[in-house]
Image 1 (cartoon, rainbow, N blue to C red):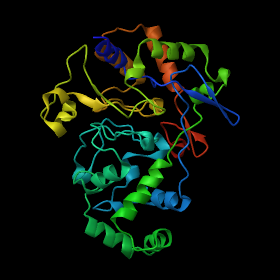
Image 2: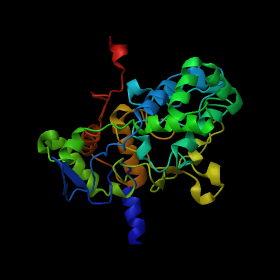
Image 3: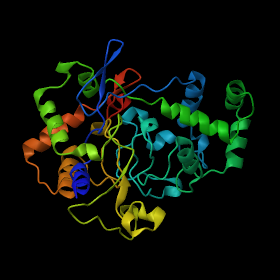
Image 4: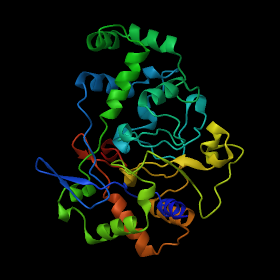
Length: 334
């Protein structure tokens, strides 16, 4: 009973890791009593693979019709996603799920809304071959890349042979592992910069902990590594005739217990990745927080509580390439 209650209390899904954190002060790791640790830097990555993978990530050469790139749905200039409920895929068909942010994806053990994959290489191959996403075949894609002088030379230089399936999946995954967004206000707070968060943000963090959110959102990525049912204190959303995404993992396993079960998403940069949930049903963080409190906690939050939690969630926005992430590209503001 105690474990069951703990899981239910944790299902607000705006929370923190169960493990005790560590803070980095100077060159020394200092033990803390906080339940979260700052976002870790990625392991050393081959810069030539990062550059090649980044070029391919933004190039429509990877799609069957040569019109879509990975950036089409995961725009690095707008929080690593695009701000629509569900994106449009190959032949104009709407995708089953909302596009999650690509940032910090290398820190997730489970990938995809249903937790289909445990490696970036697996997921990338599925995306490339999916007839409603990139819609290519290996033969056509490898032939196309080999015929491109720039890419052909790059694979020869970096991998020592012509482009093949393993090398392509490797360079894409290496680039994606580089997409870390450190230096959020919350990270700085955990590292000892007590002034990095104001009183309202700290109150939100207190509520975050007191309401047991850490049972779902674990690890330095604040999620991405476990499953939870969407709809504990209220009925799980029913699937419609046009999109079966509400069924969650059931569409993979056909197990009744998996209906409405999803991978718990990371909350890193959540303030710049609207809309929210697997189908993009919530357009704002306030709406998402209220929905999760009712659905997962059986709790109706006050306006002040919602505002405080949202203020805390805003402190999770980090930096990429030396700039704080934004939901709007700089180019669109020029």
